[in-house]
Image (cartoon, rainbow, N blue to C red; front, top):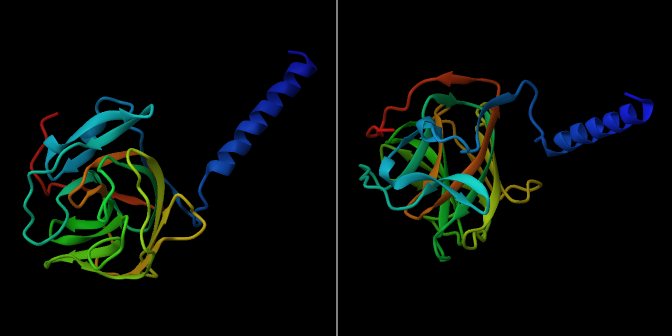
Length: 240
């Protein structure tokens, strides 16, 4: 290898590392990558526990492999709460930074939504973040299900977001259990669209889905100080 080839190789490596650094999220000290999933492998469904396995499948949208919620789940929770849930089955998270891409396949309307789930300890104890087109007491807020129908508790929120139809959006969520805070960002990571505080469920499963709409999930990455190994055996088993 001559000096010119060596220089070209060095410049290419530097550019690649710079790009990765620019793409990497800002993380608290001690955080590391705990989980990632891009749905390129056929056994990706085995990572999840579903309220109804028949409502979910692997699909592709705009050249992106994804997990698709393609119909309503045959699931009846005891209290008024989301129907369509896919939990990362084997990991329990406390503090975390989550980045994911979500897409709605529902025709736009006020409650058009996709949801993030966290602190999930069971069907009657968890949080979910309802991200919707228009805010009201039952939409576009952070909710707690605690042995009662869901209740909103966000301290700050916006008037809503635009899902569009079959458009990918980048979501980032941050949880700090010591402070009790949860923040979520939509496309623009410089300013959160919601801020909430609660410390009922300090650890739990993380998941994705919708209250009663349909959509897709891909490019999941979760960073944190640690994660526990614990199976989410809350729902009926999938036969994969």
